[in-house]
Amino acid sequence: MKISHGIEYVFVRLLAGLFRLLPHRAAVIFGGRLGSAANNLWLSRHKVVVENLRIAFGNDMDDSRRDEIARGVFVNIGRTLAEVCRFPKLDREKILNLVSADGTESFQEVLDHGKGGILVGSHFGNWELVGAFINAIGYPVDFLVRGQHNALVDAYLTDLRAFCGVRVIHSEKDGGMREILRALKQNRQVAIVSDQHAGSQGIIINFFGRPVSVPRAPATLAVRTGAPLVTGYIMRNEDLTHHCHFYPPIYPDMEADPDAEVYRLTKLYTERYEGLIRKHPEAWLWTHRRFKYVPKGEQSEGTFVE
Image (cartoon, rainbow, N blue to C red; front, side):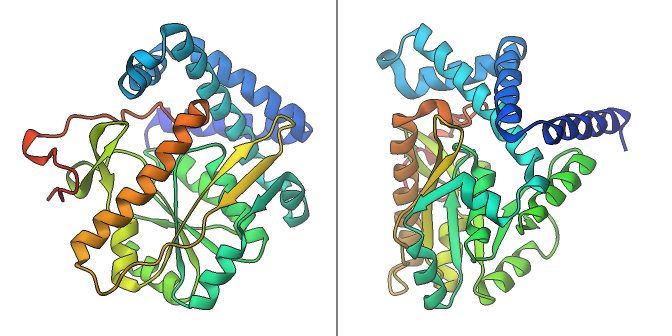
């Protein structure tokens, strides 16, 4: 174990303890202020946010607006961190008081379908709280995640999710795919955040007018198993509560060409969250270098990158 990882882990535990000592609203406000400070101090990541916004919105957004949104992005990260650290304080009743929703009938429809559900999300609002809420209303959830570089922090994050009943499946570990298929056979919901660069394993989809590599896993799983996709989002209200909206399930066409169907489903949900991000850019995680170069031979939308 690296010494730096140990120091980072101790810092995270101390910060989490502080968030749990504070009342909920005070903790979230404090987290937002820490996020605002990070926007001013973590200049390299601030530049990534501003550059992503420049690529996405071009001349439709000036420098002052980009800086304003960048600050909002970091405030959202800080608030989300505070809320996640407080998961041990959130029982079912508190979660249901904190989060309202519409469209939850989608989960009963998926349950009745009997093949499990694939929840396709993005790093929008407090994406971690979505799984806690879905579990709280009675639909078991597994998160498919890529482990953190710091194994100690990764294990702690897994424990925090477990407080809200969310199980974790690590995508990079042996047997990860078997765990996913097992969860779907058990008629569980498998949540996959699918909005970051997928590199050579992705499918090319236009995002804000640019070709980007999008993970193919959600749509591929749907086509392979017949499990429907469920998309939705969570918004933080002015009073620091949250509201979720879930769309009706999207069923794969099992008679269609598999590659064409994977493309159709991936394009559909990518366009759906692009529209959401356009309306509320400060709520999305622009800190990731989303618009990485796509080789010329792979720039056509729908191309599967091998």
